[in-house]
Image 1 (cartoon, rainbow, N blue to C red):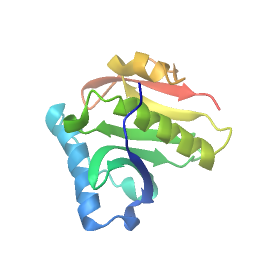
Image 2: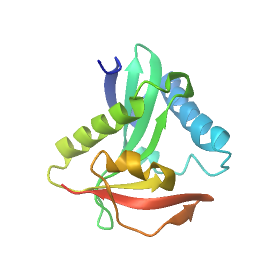
Image 3: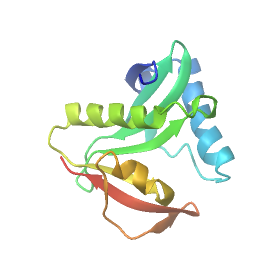
Image 4: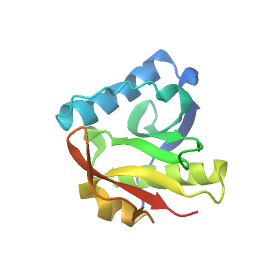
Length: 151
């Protein structure tokens, strides 16, 4: 069995065309705000400081994730992990996370990687080497746990 066909694109926010930026933000709003019925500030002021990894099929956005640099308070982080509803069931979530992990490891070798995971996805992220490091908490009324993948 072969995996999904895609190309990987990693850019800073200011490198996006207006059309590509719109597509990424629309995907994130469609998944996190509309699909999950979670009104929250998707445009949170952090995108400018992050890299954005996208899986593409031509011009079609399949999935995206936000990659945070390490800070004094945090190891590198992966967030805003979203797969287009039109492309689910193709193992793109796993492909997206594997590409995101590889990109973070390339840029920050040996560093642990943090995520804030929706609690029901612990097994999925655990299969990628992440371990739960916090008690469950509510983020925007959705149960989450902090997870760490050791470097």
